[in-house]
Image (cartoon, rainbow, N blue to C red; front, side, top):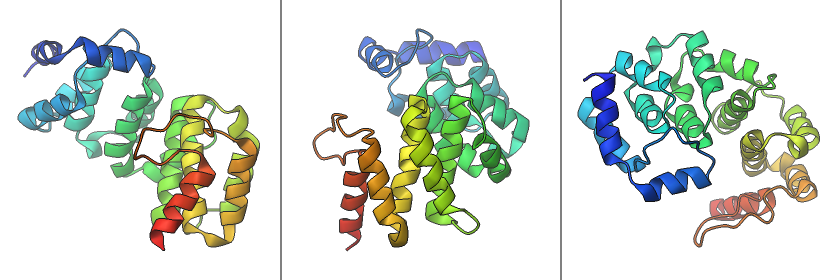
Length: 221
């Protein structure tokens, strides 16, 4: 399947309601408005196709990029290519798919993570803090948790919105999984107040760190 043929299929799957939803969440005009479930169905039909995926990514069309993420052969990406992809993202939902499906499985993810934790690029920093939160949960050995809390306390309040989200995620994971740092994590969240007033859909947990931490801890019993 060619890039042109794939884009034609994506365009046929687009709908106005999804376009409006994407736009409300920060997407630009380069989109068809394809439901994520339909993107997944198309990916299953096409299967892994690294060359096609790279071509789709370069279009900048967000639906093509969602599809590209599912078609990529992660191990075929060099560290430099992975870094460029992360920095080229313009829509946070694409960033989150890329982080969840590709970055976390990349063989150089730790080296990349370390670099992203010192960058001013908002999407790279978002990826760095997301990857750090993942390490807090699964492989915290070697992480300086007090230093991470120091950074969150001093930087999150003025960070770009793209970065605040995953910094907050890292704060929450520290508070949930490390009782010795829970009191401090709760205090940082309370003092900064980030996401305190963010509307939360019924049945979902608030992203406000103190509420999120306490809810998850109570579920663990």
